[in-house]
Image (tube, rainbow over the protein chains, first blue to last red):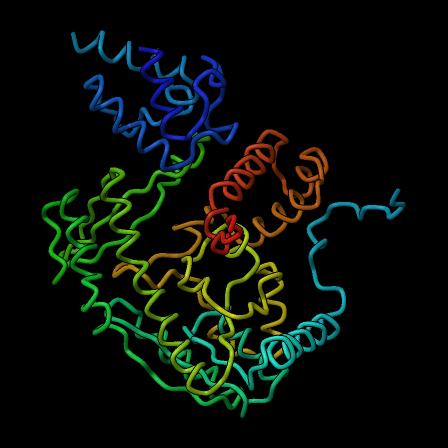
Length: 80
Length: 331
């Protein structure tokens, strides 16, 4: 799952996936902007079936590959 | 190595030290740019009734005289009726000829409203554009979460009740793209009059609009000169008072005047009062440290760091808007 998330971010931002580490702060480092966040919300919904509630729009859930992975894992675990 | 000592950061740091000298320098440059560089006879200004176009008009009157200026009001279906009254007032005050060009027909031709309303209905199906009003914005609680802006659409129904929903990417982009027809239609009309008179288009964006990217590329960002493009908003107000802009215009809350529901610029884009934003931007731009800025602003160092990070992000993500077409391709 982490690789899928990393590859999505890399493709959306024309960035080399190897430069995006698990803990790279994708917003703070300017890799992703508003459009990136909206795209990411769409991506995790279409790829993993995870919908994001308004209250879940937090840096703790979206700030890095690791955080997105944890967020999606927790949501899918709850769903199943 | 520069030996200039940096002024201690305070709330007065951007107050204009010699307002007449500043106005004089802007006027001299504006006249030289329009007459000598662009070789145009005068200026056309779109007047909205807001503070920025009022101050641009006041400065331009000082630079060229009213007889070399031509003002155009460009209302459309969603414009506030107050805008026309204030626009007429400022033109009368400075003796500048003004006409009205209603752009609603052109916008209908582009299907501006239809395209925008279709996207709103995708998110809030009960929306009835004939009776309800709409706007988009960023909820304040989201701003504190240190994520890039995510927009919500709010519909104000005819009975006064409201409903908001987060905009998915496709709908957000469609609403913005459709709404941007408004600024681009205005730009086209201003250039019609400028070319017909052999004048230049005098743009009205201030420093924040230019640098934070709060303008539409080839819309209100389409102009030949931007005389107040280097002035902070509080400096624009200082000059407005100095040049005698009517109080009703000075005291109006700046709005976007873009969506059918009323919306302040602070709510839509800036997310903080102008007085604070000016100072924080100045601090960031002039490389003051968060430790130097925080006490004067009554903020914590962490809060200033967050704001500076947000400015940096805005500069980066809006770079596209400020770029001219790239044409240095190999031959």
